[in-house]
Length: 331
Ligand code: NAD
Image (cartoon, rainbow, N blue to C red; front, side, top):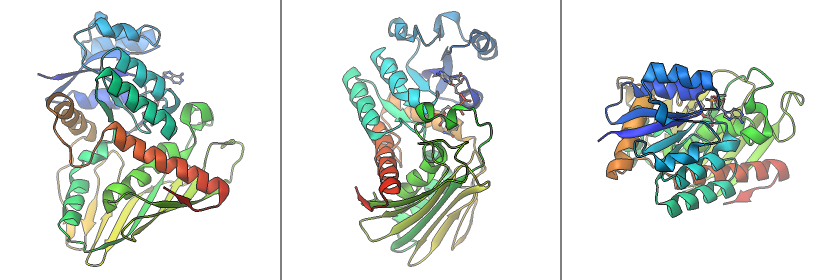
């Protein structure tokens, strides 16, 4: 059987996921949750969605009575994820939630607990965890081809446009660049090194205090220390373009991904040469793999569950604390 999915939040990324799902073999778009009736009718036509599978933000709890939807994919602004995920779980649906899973670790934990209590699975939209070049580097690292891992560098950033968008609103975004794009370096530092950080230091800089209000970070540099002694040095910013690069080096070799997390194609090379895998639309692979995880209990190479999302949130909480206090924070 196919995983029958309702998308909540028919914005830019929700649209990208819906288009990518057309090519899925194991997941199918069957429903929507939206506050905009004109979008609902456009999606009904485009994706042949029955009226009975269309909900808004007031009535989507009624999905509890709808046997034709297995999972809800929450693709709304970050600050709304917690509420949306918990309500979908209470309606008895598995939940896929976009990154960042929530705006802090406390919220993330509440979401995990709610899904556990409801007996549904919670996954986070980490599409890169299924990306072939990334997985090849992880395989090489596990096989010892880079030797002892020493250092990771993550650069994640772009120039943010419209100052009125939700991404620059503290309540809806939960922060600034770190929540939106810096999280890729946080997450990447973990799957590239294969370790969990034990300490964090961070420095914040702001060139535009009007565009980036209190609590909305423009640029943060951060460093992570790992149990093996390996270290990471990362940059998260809303003020520099073309920053999407991962670099991992060990005693015997290195790996570079540039671009590393964009919509693709991802480009990768190691000390052994260029990595060549055909580009497949990330969200198509992600949704097929997530269908296998939810329906058949498949174990992904790099986890995409709520606990995985929570690990990043704990590190982000620590980065914000370290930037604010100027002190090293132990995890
Ligand atoms: P967007 O602004 O394009 O879409 C957000 C949608 O949420 C809109 O349709 C909007 O109408 C709806 N919405 C519902 N309630 C709202 C409210 N109270 N205020 C504002 N909007 C409300 O944003 P997006 O780029 O689609 O991002 C949505 C989520 O997806 C974010 O969490 C973001 O981090 C994530 N995202 C992930 C990726 C990825 O590659 N995994 C890429 C882009 C975005």
